[in-house]
Every structure is written in structure tokens, then in C-alpha cells.
Image (cartoon, rainbow, N blue to C red; front, top):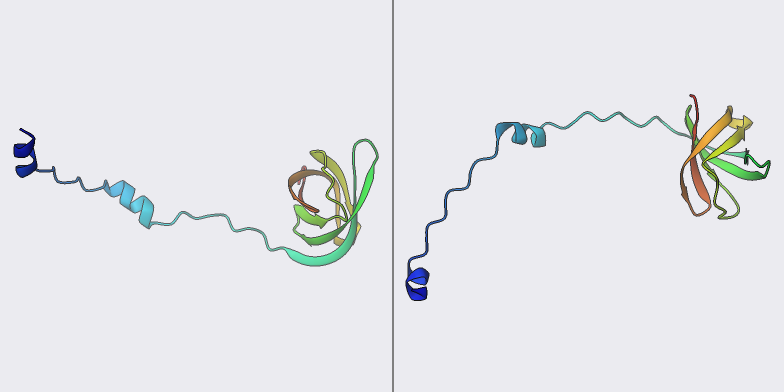
Length: 111
């Protein structure tokens, strides 16, 4: 029986064509919201923890709603800090969005 199955393989059914909606979804690109233009600067800034501990850093770039800072050390930070970046006109509560080594991204809360 194995020999007959090898000689006379069953025919494979024809593959079905993909649905038209699926093809359109792959072909028509989705509109993504563009990222805001970031202004590159090199200004001093401070962040203050809830405990009162202050860290000094440098603003690398910023938008109206956030900022990227570089610090001299790789310390971890709490989720919410107070940002004082008067040199670029940003001040207030900020949420730590990401941290990679000595750099961190902050989003102003309530903007």
C-alpha cells in the first residue's frame, strides 16, 4: 500500500486566493501620525525627585511636550519627576518614558 501511495500521490487542492480586504490592507499604507520636530540643543536642566533629590543633566533635544536628557551617571529614576529646563522653556511634572544608560526621555504631564 505504501508503494501505491508513493506512485499515486493524492492531488493537492488549489490554494485559495487571499481575500480582497486583506490584500487592500497590505497594499494601502496606514496613515501614521508624524513625530513632532525635535529641536537639538545643549542646555542645562534639573530634575527633582519627590524626595527632594536633585539631578543635573543636559537637554539634548526637545519638543513642546517632552525632552531627552543626558546625565553624568546611570542612576535609575522614579516614574514621575519635576523637570526644570528653563533654558528651553519647559518646566513642570514629567513622566519618565524611557531610560537607556545615562540618557532618558521625559514627557510633560498635563500638556
